[in-house]
Image 1 (spheres, each protein chain N blue to C red):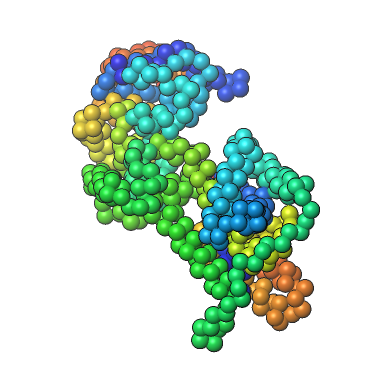
Image 2: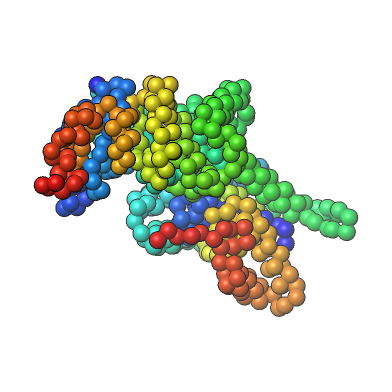
Length: 281
Length: 253
């Protein structure tokens, strides 16, 4: 459950970062995650790379893809009503799914990279894959946290989400910061795609839809736009889903996840770590 | 001449906000711009800083054309401004509000930042020192860690001023800095404008409704009405200009 949670958290970060700078939900992000999984497949079967190389390839590939979608699909709509950008994001998502679908027959099987070695810690038994997923995801989140709170780029990011219009008056180009945001968010999505594909080795072009929705829920639970909130939300949703499958018939898993979102939205519409935004009238 | 505005016009749809404005600002001058609400003063600032793109005409800073450049590029050419309704990064700390203004010029890239190179540490230290110096100068040093949005109104104005200076401007545009201030604070602002202009060797364009301040601080005043320059001269000349009196007090008064 920590494994699933950390994957949700990684993807949720992409949603929340983009929302933070552009107040836009990038609904194509789940499909970037899917393509991360496909890049992992390509890398492992065609290029025969090691796991580390595979991870780097899918992260860079996804980052590039994220930057391109922003540059060509979202940037022309930067000053259009938000609804236009969101509909475009849905379109980009469908494009990515169907483009991938047209390439070859599916599903594909990821060759196994891990022997089934078990690690026993105290009373816990975990596979080495689970440990790797959790360690890697948490490591990436720590790096991201440092970037956001300790670097120039991070400061520019926070400044944009506070008041984007005046950031250029600091001599900082908003477009560069937005590109970097998409690169980082999509890169994390790509990493999640690889980790997911190795754990659940059957992949198809629609795998990003449901996982993307779940990650989006995680971001909303934590408070969309809030980076630490997205991490927290991912782990909470991971826990809830796994427990739901233990206590109830496993088909109720998604019902529980979406119910959690609805209940939370009633009582805390701005999420667990989010702050209510007051609109100026 | 530091700034040459030549035949500048701007319209919003069919509404002409500024029509054929020509203003010349020599170096180290404190120029006041006055005029009734809606006369195009703030639009002029938005054109100079590149937030709007002029419909026609030109704005040259030290001979370089500003029209058509992105706001970030114009800021790096040493133009800074403040806003009529204070615009701070409210969720960022007071220190970060000033630091970010220095980052536009910072030389270090992601490589330096990632590996904490000597160059990075030196630059970072320098930026924090410079930011602290500015904050001390504006008596904001005891609020360093507080979120900018939590400061009282007067201190927010001061912080916005400090942040504008942190971009190292040669030309500073101040949009109604005395708005919402009591007479005592206006007196302080008066002194502050004069010593800041000297200390940072600034050329300042000041939009202000507070006539007392404009008359005392500015060496030259331009009067705008309905997007047209209707008078220009020393404060004394402008004060006695019949057209200006008409605009402010109504015809025949």
